[in-house]
Amino acid sequence: MKPVIAMDGPAGSGKGTIAKKLASHFNFAYLDTGMLYRAIAHLGIEVGKIEELSAAEILKTAREIPMSVLKSDIVGLKASKIAKSPEIREVMTRLQRDFVVCPGDNHRGSVLDGRDIGTVVIPDAVCKIFVTASPEIRATRRFRSLKRNNDQITYAEVLESLIARDKQDQSREIAPLTLNDAYVVLDTSKETVRESFLRAIKIVENSLKSVEP
Image (cartoon, rainbow, N blue to C red; front, side, top):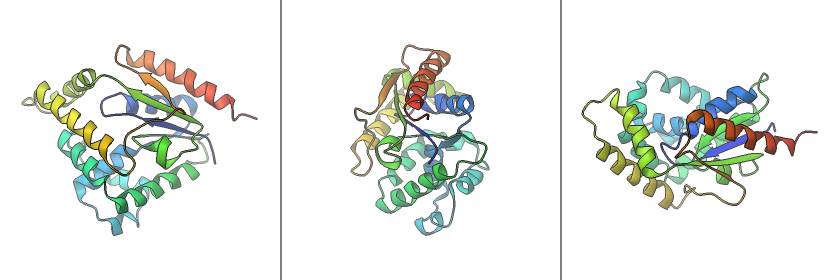
């Protein structure tokens, strides 16, 4: 299997932005696993139907949904809720593992961002990064993003929703949001995107050295 970079962390930490940049920098395929759960939650796709699809097919369907809808806190909480289902979790884990087995001939490996990539989905990932930031910083980032499509939303609402999402993700019995000693923690609270990205490059480069012939 080609190298896998696991990017885990809570909502609003910046892991998605950094993961995309890393995928482009290293010529790795990129999979936003959170978007898979959001699409399924929003569309109400049943387990039986999910088993017939691939990650690429689900993401293709997701592209037809306005990003403002998929990225909303309401859909985020729904996604976190269905993620508690053992049946859905099992199927989604298989889809994600299938993705890294065949990331594409032109890709050297894959980058997956989510909440349980390095602990459950790909426990033998060559590089595991846990991206985090304070709740207040993360809420500020999400508020600025959501404000573009919803003038009525308030910072207090976003912070409350984010804290609720954190609690839901961390307390679920199946694949909770957590980390272990194999992770390198990347706190983005006081950094620009570029600063965090450059630090992440160094982390990945050091990890890849251990698997290069």
